[in-house]
Length: 377
View 1 (tube, rainbow, N blue to C red):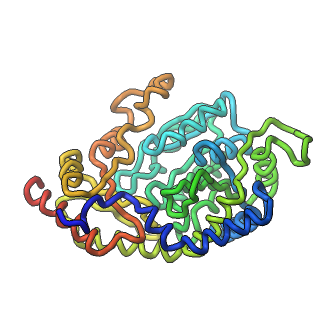
View 2: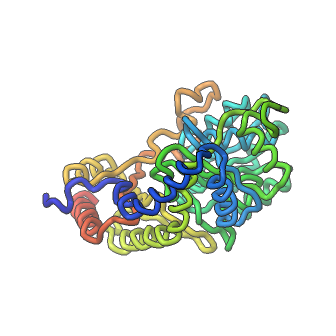
View 3: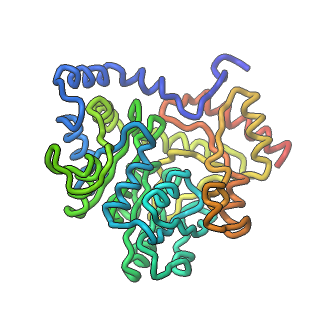
């Protein structure tokens, strides 16, 4: 194995940092010189610019010390007055924090199987899961591909349900010309370092077009306080610090360039990988910003091992659907309840994708996979 192909990671954060090091350090210096480190000028500017980018009316920067997605979803559920005894419909094929946030506000996660082509919540299966206790739907735009929002919003309107978009992997993704995160009642974004727009620490964001929801979110993320030392409700400390806001301001400037590069990498994979495996599809009217490029094959684990031996990282997002997680055993779901999610969980494999992935690196990845498929397909 030559040096060029030695250890190709899933994402190369160092290469991105090297490219943006000078403007990032300049912005951090501005924060240090300002003496304002929490909820200052950089954070306010970021809130306006990200909301504008998503085409939402309002934005709230959140998270410190724990997973930004979990905080964002918790705050969103609480802002919509969802809690004890309520039910929230969502997908079982997602990161654990999606279901975890529902449980942490006292509500019950109700899972619905996914569409086998897009891996997103299947609108055709939502209505049968609605009860008198159902209050909301959490839609996950998985891997960067938009869910079928028009159908989901129609169901929500008909049944008087709120819609929260988990767009943590999908900033910049469009559905029929609308940016995800601005279509439902609330949009949640994670700026975890490996995301398409990533901080250099924990950070997250919430968008909404509703002024009252925005005001409640702003209060809840700051200990339930609108005025210092005066607290009108029980909130939490989920404030985005100024240094992370400064870093994100720099990266936001380059986001569309990086998303374009991700699409180029994805296109090369799709055009050159073997047709013996399943590659991502992009239905009409929907976009894919490729936070992950995932393939499906029966011998997933064997290919993963071969890639590893050839210096190529791979990952499984996600090996165990939420309804089969031990933490959700109290919901009494069983294996076989959501066969599509379970089947895909056993076949899915994510390949390296990041803006700085070189042509030589990608050619090597494609060659290893195609050689494997010829022998095992």
